Image (cartoon, rainbow, N blue to C red; front, side, top):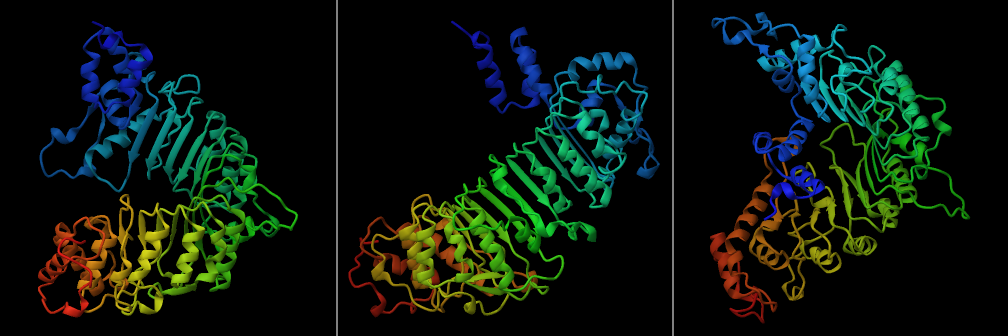
Length: 566
């Protein structure tokens, strides 16, 4: 009978690649037979999540004096070194293992005083000495494809940079030193994915970054922190871009006073494959960059961007409400017509305890985004909607799945920030069959639930979570609980969140919503599966849970309900 090793090589390799085998399991597989050993060893050495442990095991042992000295010696007095010098024979034994490595991760922080972190620094300093055979033709890992380098020390990743690299992720505050950025394109001309974080926004590093992007013509995914909008100049020629993440939030004044920025526009259609865009940028620069003039005869193809995450800042103190926000919304509605997902954070007041209210008309341009499935806007910017506005919203976004609107205004009275009531939830249940996760603010004490309108109206079975935040509740919680038992598909789909202003503990409204969740969980077993109304059995179960038999009067019972109805 054919066995495991009789499988085609591609199938056997696929099994090991997709399996959840740990390194110990792969080591055991490597010792079973010659055929399986080759595949297991390739998998075992392909990913190196801890660079130092790998070098310690395969290159040269590390001597830790902390294991032999007497107690009471300060860690700073210890010296961690290799147990001996690294010889050419060590490199020869190391080479077969190093040739299999494709993905390497290194993490070292000076703020951590643990022994292993001090070992990391000692070993890396030895590896970074010029005497070692580390050149573009003889690297430590000749087949490396992905390198993650996260450190706040001045240890350089140069010994591991090679022309085979296709993905580079560096969180290194010294990336701008020693001409590292200027030389990177020569060492890694095949880079497809570059992620540079923790950089300093000074004149020279931004200039080097612009040169780097201009020379790496195979880039598809770019993520850079602390840069200037001038980076869009070389990026316009990177037509292969699929994902772009920039933080144009520098500390130097020259980066946000570019004399050419007034006339500089970015037409994102030049990136035909760009589907994800994430920007942290000044609000005025965003409008200037993307507000491309259009005429009536302009029949341009829509933007390819499907997922947009943007965080706006007010770097120059020019943001005004509602004028500036209106300009931003207009640009989003006109230039990003293909969006499926939008997360937007607009500038807020200096005092974050002051919520800001927006009229629904201010966000009307976003209704042109008919493919919207995910929408979220930051807290403190509350969208005031009537039920007619909600009907307009769901008609424009029939495929909406996640709708996160601010629902926790930092005030003791959230009622001025909503015009919706508990019955408004039925509009979403009726018109949004794909809705999974709404967060919004309602006034549940304004209008009591209308139980006569409930027949056949509830959220779909794939509904995940309803979060009503600081929505005011009536004195009697029973009607709200009964209403929710009918419209929700499960008790666990009701969530509660919200804090006191300035984050000092949970609010009283949150505690009451938490009680609603607990009662809902207790009475769910008597909810039933009927569709004629709320049963008396459920009403009595809610009464017992509330420990207040006087909250329901005989006049408030549904007229047509029976013990078997639900």
